[in-house]
Image (cartoon, rainbow over all chains, first blue to last red):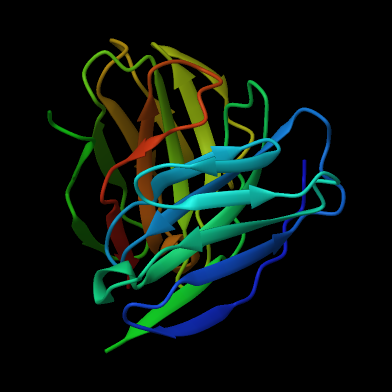
Length: 110
Length: 114
């Protein structure tokens, strides 16, 4: 089980690109890096998952260097509605339960 | 389509009462999960089902917690003799099958034990 470390909180102005870095020094070869987003009074929502290099979807990009000891979630041009808690998880292939940490509380400022 | 729904959304119980929390997963989803989320913390795994079979209940904090999914769809999490430390948001999630990275979460039930 990969232990992940990420900043407790971040602030950003609207329209800026936000990068949230996650450290996972003991990640195993069969672990994927997975990010979830949680708005107040809602359950978490899957954002993106990757193994190596770069993955991009309509919501975010995920950068994972070759050594896989860290990863960066990139949110382009954030808006106020992106204010949420973002969780970085190491998910073992075929695993059935998710281990969330405390996440990063992102606050977008007008 | 409809997502995961949970009821009630809010529950206040006096210490010692029993409570039952309901989860309606996405239709056709084989796997169903329960998590507990304390204030300011991330969700913590409680238990999961594949269809009606409860395959892992290692996260249930005590024998006062019991979950069932008798027909492989709707699930109920029951807490007997509630204690103040049981106050939390209880989240239900479902996925197409076991081992899928994407779990779909409901809005949760906020339980307050007074």
